Length: 74
Length: 249
Image (cartoon, chains in turn cyan, orange):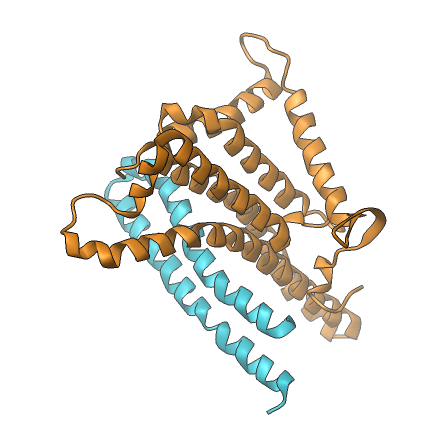
């Protein structure tokens, strides 16, 4: 197989890491919403943790994206 | 107009400055925009120095920014960590300014290079290690061996803790880098779609309104991500500094 074709396939496979990011972000926000609808006054206090959790989860998915970019272009 | 979404991250050297060990240090577009960020931050805080007792609008903006970071440091690490407040403050505002400047057309996002973010992350972790050893002596290495475990578990736990500590500067650097690169690549991609569709002319050009709306939505998301990534870098610095003061977790 040519090198360029292998690069494209590798980049596509590395992009599947974003499935985990999607599930994780959905899970974080769904738990926050469920808790916020039960206890609205306590929801504002947790907003910092919500954003922190979202950023950390997004980061893990983006590691896969970075791997794809490295495979494609380096 | 570049057709390649990755061309926007190219470094353009303008003038050679000096040589270190065979590598040429030059004035690049990246250095220019970093200086612009620094000047903007200094100007923003210079505008807030009216110093009345009942603050006006600009002064309360400056005070709110200070309090935001001060509360973050105090809540996460404790009052003794206010010594590190200048570091956290600088990190937060430099990354925020660099990210926000990158949102403007034709400006360059300096934090979209792993060299910049790795420098920030490695420096932060070095500060954590040096401060930990300075404050606690060699007892600081007890963070790798949390107390209260049966003795046999330490054989597994200590390597795992060391690996997770080593992953801290790596994840700090790559998180910021990947978010910035991914955001700007997506923006460029949707803008290219809109440009191609519009260039086709005729009835197809009407379809270019869909990627245009997507680009607008992405710009909103990218502003959020710019602020959020600066916040996450700062708060993770506070969390890692917590290890300096509370060796027993």
